[in-house]
Figure 1: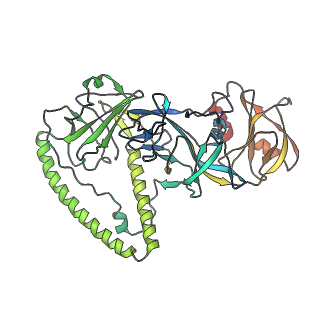
Figure 2 (figure 1 turned 135 degrees about the vertical axis):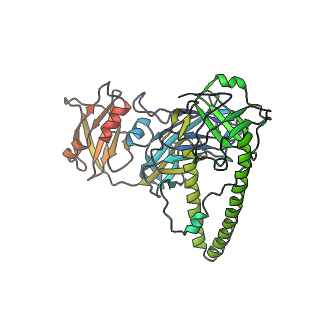
Figure 3 (figure 1 turned 60 degrees about the vertical axis):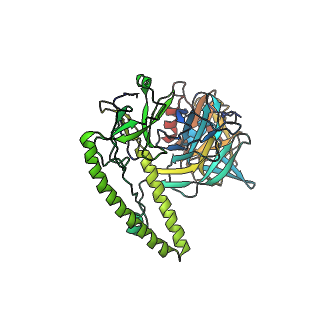
Length: 480
């Protein structure tokens, strides 16, 4: 998908709007793994990355530093991927066990991701004053899952914090209508300006769910800021993958950004109108300003009443603030997500379309690049068995990377030796690697064996063919 930057007119639809590689994680099967997706972000201005699952990565301005703590300038390459299924955990080589206070636990995951960052091929690091935020899609809304970071030097998981889960479809609340109304956004209208001949003008089409302060004006255009030094007419000859519109730091200015896999450019522009459109907009502005001032006064009255009501009950006040934060966060995520709904080219044809596949989001800031996991550490009651692995012809199999997967657990239990343990009265399957190929025995076959504690048990494994030794086939085997 490509976007051609046209100097005269650009159409954009916005809906509201040490090395970082490690030898600790060794995939059990070479060349079969979740691929890392690559993105280019603007380190100076900050940026937003949308992953194909629906996850949202937020990078504030100046989020990256070098090994000496110096702020990184310019473009930074982000590499990112997610792991959501047991097969993902297995093929990645990521451990799913956890030790705490001398106790052993198994991770049940509600979402896992790996994020790396580079400047000109050299790893960069998180600025502790401006941490990036991952908003990770999740399969469950349990509040018992913590955030863990994988320390690959020590080979352990570090417990960071509780994960904050947001249901983007949820509007459940115990508060009154007036309180919810107080959480609704009140947008001050922007006074329209008239276009002049001092700099180029471009046109951006804004979706009705986008920047509300601009939507009251018809035929809105954007004029490049005369002080802008980044705008270069030669950039019109290059093809761009994505266009974004963001509010600038100066009131009345917006930042328009074009990017592709190689680089990104951005420049400041001001909303303007021409001719009769400008005269009409002035009348609209006066009306909207009166409405805004009235709503703002009502907001202040509501806030005063709420403060008086909750001041005598600290617990109720805390609950109200938490609910207020939840609603604000939900609205912010929806706004960011919807901004990537679609981008149109000059012929008004959709050339980019991003769809969110899950409405549950787990949000957390990161203080380092690597593997981050949203997990619940649980203790399983397992019984030992001594397995013997054979192929379908009765030949012995020397398996490596042996692991057990349970239908009821979004996790995986690895066993470095042939001494394995199983969970009684639970559906499970065993997987492993033989000569670089995936080997497995299904849930149904394991159920028939009815293996019991401290017994020798023969497992007849299916070794997939070279043709089927790929991610999609292996995933299908486990999920079926």
